[in-house]
Length: 270
Image (spheres, rainbow, N blue to C red):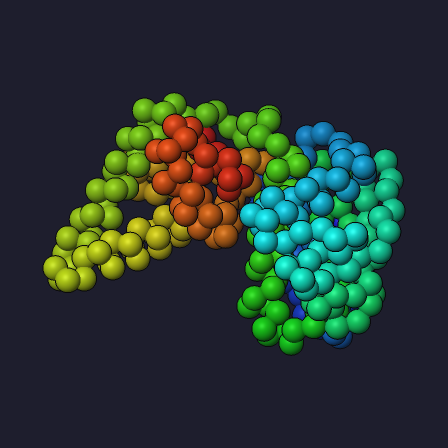
């Protein structure tokens, strides 16, 4: 899979979405009839064995869903429900693939799930999958969850080294955070007394998610010459940004940048 190849395929498909980002991140969704093909990738400096990709997939099924999803045989289950049933894994030197055989999220057997290292990227792809949900509902619900889980999984496999840039020291990070807190408090202060808490929470969430997933820079980040990036150097997605914000309070408890570890992000000098 590559951006040029994906674009060429899109010309033969009735519906296509693709977005490239710096750092090797690429997302593509292509529909043909009732089947969908999805590609996600991140920059990968090293080759990973197919066996490692197989084992890390099953490990992250549980860990990245906080135990809500679990492996049962070759199926991904949510409680007693079999969501996706996969066939036996075919492991190669640089990749692994499973046939999709059924489950509540599949309208019919068919298609495959694949992970592989390819041309300096770690690629996850789904081909020939028939979602049970209608297309519009699938795009609004299941697809964003798939993209977020897949991206977090790929970044975990990629690892935090080599770093995506020059790390920022804790004092500079704290200064940027103080500036951003001041911005959010100032906006909330102009709201009515009974609305301040709601405005503060809403603006704080929207401000940080929009800035982190846009340029990577909040006002504090721009002033202190730093930005938030994914660990492969690519732009942070909205899902990653939201996850980073939710995990931010854990910094005070852990005394380390646990929110960056959870969301697969880092702060680098601009």
